[in-house]
Image (cartoon, rainbow, N blue to C red):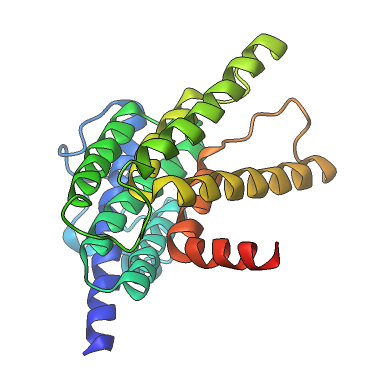
Length: 263
């Protein structure tokens, strides 16, 4: 039974990942995510159902369009597989529960954020607002349900998280603008932590910020040392926010307990 549930959740993630690809491709260009139907970006041929099977269509077609043989971006199977694996990981942590559904909703938005920011270096306001809507619903649920994410933290824990994390990032952005005369940090990065804090609460959102800064700093240092980037190069912060948040919602409480033990 457990195996069947895991398989179903993984397949659901794959299918939703296919839709996330549509959002990733269309939202930055301000196009409708409902119509027109998906088509090859090279030849314009409208894709048939057999061309849209998550991951498998890419493999069967050897990574090329069935009609014009143009290469298909690796983004498509990567997003689909990532979605399936993320949904499965959240299920293994929280089981079928309110936390599972709400956190899968959050991660759905963050998967889209990851790839849009990686490609376009923007985090659309629509995604932030969608996250806030879900976060407020989860916040309201906590008045009637003791969730496993924030545990015994007070009801206002998510609000403290917003003040601490988004407030800190806003301060960094303002100081960067004053000192360097340019955006040291995008406002999208500041705003996306509002829904993250609503979902994770104070402790886990602060941990997510720490993991974001740590992973981003290590990656940036590596890129500079290898001369793939220089000190003035812009590096999207969103992907590191997504990674930090994902680690926090899966392992955050264990990481915090481990840290407190070694103090």
